[in-house]
Amino acid sequence: MQIYTRTGDKGYTRIVGGSQLSKDADRVKAYGTVDELNSIVGMIVSQSNIKTSMKKELMIIQQYLFDCGNDLATPHGKKSYRVDESLTIWLESRIDEYSKIPPNVESFILPGGSQSSSLLHFARTVTRRAEREIVTFMWTNDMNQEVLKFINRLSDYFFAVARMINAEDGIQDVLYERSGQVFHNDITKEDL
Image (cartoon, rainbow, N blue to C red; front, side):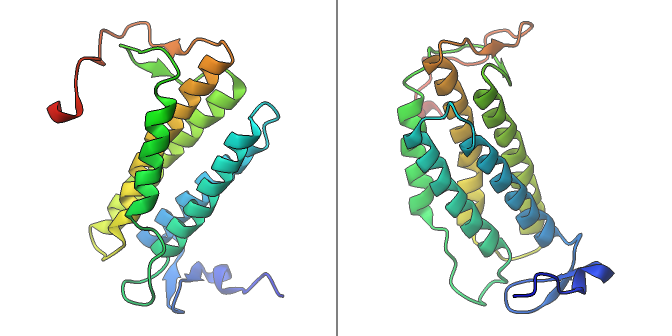
């Protein structure tokens, strides 16, 4: 199989369905940032101190991220989308489980702690950038809205996992020293 196509030599790429787009098009930026995020998750999986069960879960997320990229590269109506509500529901269940492990926090947390936790925070910030790119694309195009929901929840997932790993490793989260109380533990879902 030939890897190079030469269409990129003039600043274009092909998307699902065969259309050609500029490499700086909003659609390409959105799925390109999701691809970058997937590479970061691969870096996290390669960390030797990540438990096997967590590695398997992160590898599932890599599959879902590839699905997100595929859906973003697919013009509306060209073929069925892959990302549905079940993926976001699954992420929420994992977030709820992992959030029980570290102590409650009432201030902002800076990225840091263990190397793996730091990489998870890095993934969280790239997830937020992917979300911004997707929103930019969404304003002018029909797209699978479930991708945006999944990506939005994924940043929360990375935050929860980063905190959990620090807690399990006996490392305190790095708190923002100038922060006042920003998280109120007495807020319920009904208050939101």
